[in-house]
Image 1 (cartoon, one colour):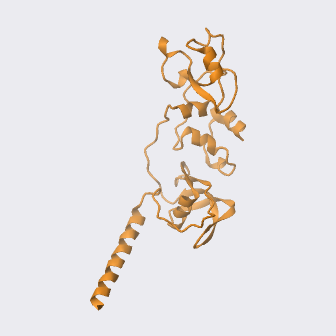
Image 2 (tube, rainbow, N blue to C red; image 1 turned 30 degrees about the horizontal axis):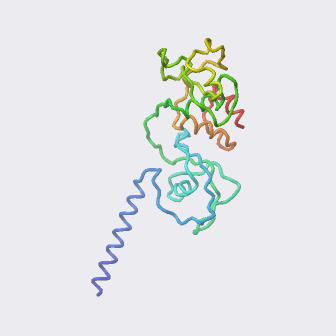
Amino acid sequence: MAAQLGGHDNTRAKSCVQRARVLRHASPFCFPTLPFSRNCDMHDVLVLNSNFEPLNVCDMRRAISLMLLGKAEVLAVRDRPVATTSGAYKAPSVLKMRYQVRRPMPQLRLSRHSILARDNYTCQYCGSRGKDLTIDHVIPKWTGGANTWDNLVACCRKCNLKKGDKTPQQAHMKLARKPKRPHFIPYLSLPLYLKAQGHDDWRDFLPYFEEFAETTAVMN
C-alpha cells in the first residue's frame, strides 16, 4: 500500500513539473484556465510589446492570466475591479509584456473592412455614413479597373446604383478624396487600430497617423 501511495505522489509531482514547464515556455497568448467569477468584466485590454509597440488586444480573462503568470505588467487600470475566486484585482486596461515578443511584421491586407475603415465608413461620393455600405471600383472592372487601394472606395448602395459601370466623370459624380494606400504597418489591423483610438486611456500608447486624424476625431 505504501508503495502504491508513493507511486501516486511521484506521478502527481511529475505532472506538476510538466505543467510548470509548459507554462514557462508557453506563448504569451496561450493561457491556463483560471477560476473567474461569473461577473468578471470582459472588457478589451491593449497589450504592448516590451518596447511599447502595440502588439494585440485581448479580453480581460487573458489579461489577468498574463498578470498572474508574471508575463506582463500593468500600465493603466480601469475604475472597476475584476473579481476572481482568488480575490479582486484592479482591472487592467493596458499591459506591457516583460519580454520582447518576436513576430514578423504583418502586411497591411487589402480587404473590404480595411477599405471601409480607411474611408471612415463614409460614402466617398455623397458623404453618407452607416452600415449599408459597399465597395466601388472607381475605374470599372470591365475597363481594366484593378482591385487596388487606389481604385477601391466605400460607397453607399444608392450611389453605387447611380454610378453603375461608369467612371465618376461619366456618371457626373465626384470623389470626396483620392483613394490611396495608407502609410500604416502596425501589428494591429487597420479596423482594430481605429477602434482602439476610441479608448481615451489607450490613445497615448498608439502610434499617430496624420491621415487618420480626421477619422479618429469623428469617432471620439
